[in-house]
Image (cartoon, rainbow, N blue to C red; front, side, top):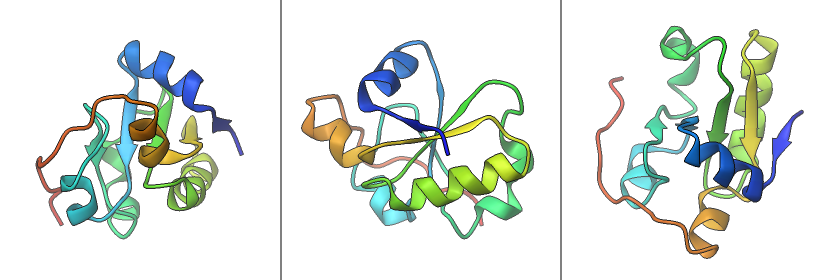
Length: 107
């Protein structure tokens, strides 16, 4: 499974990468990577058609556990998906900006 290091993710994010946050809505609203699209684990199978097929999808969660399994799921479904090692926690600890609040994904 393609894990992306935080450094590689920072570079991809700066280049307008598609970031998919698979945490629950309250976790997402408590702080997420700027520009991340929210789609909780339970909703991902129902909304895969909303994801881009060709550019990489960078899947992120709090620490990397959920994002690993969801990236594997997406790869099996034919997506170019990678999970971000260390997740949002590593992003924040490295001093990168965090956005609070935000839209809930429709259920």
